[in-house]
Image (cartoon, rainbow, N blue to C red; front, top):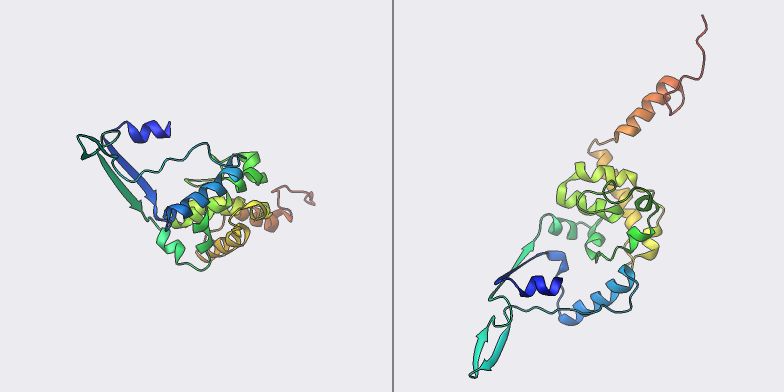
Length: 208
C-alpha cells in the first residue's frame, strides 16, 4: 500500500527522475487525470496523496509540531542519469514527455507476443528503446530498437502524441552509424551471399 509505505517509516526518502517535475500542483493533477484513463480505464484515480514533507500540526498545546502523523524527516533525491541529454536532444526530446501510462504497450503487437522481459531492459517497448539509449547506452538499446515493428499503433494511442516510430528510425540510424548491426541481420546477409536465400538452406544440388 503506497499510503502505508510513505507514512509508516520514520524517514521518507523519495527518489525521482527529473522528468517528473512539473511547475504546479495543478499541472500534477492534470497529468494524473491523463494517466488513469490510459493506464487502467478509469475516469479518475481512486485517491491521490500530496506529500510536502513531514506532517505539521498545532493541536498539541497550540505549538507547531512536525512528524506527528508520519515520518519526521523527508528527503527528495532527483536523478538525471542521461535525462538532461535526452531533453536537450532535438531528435529525442519527445521521449521525456512520457508519463508511463502504458497505453503504447497495451496496443503494441510485439509486446503482446513476447512481453517486456524479452523486449526491454529497464524500460520496455519502443519508447523504452529511446530511454534505454540515454540511461544505459546504445548497446542495451539496440536489441529493443531493432525488434520494433514500426507499425505506429503506439503513436495512435499515446495521450501525449509522442512520435515513437519516428524516434525508433532515428535511433536505428545512430546505431548503424556506431557500427552496430544485429547478429540476425549479419546471418541473413551471409546466407544471401552463400545460398541466395535468407534461411541458410542450400536449394541447388551441386553438379558432379
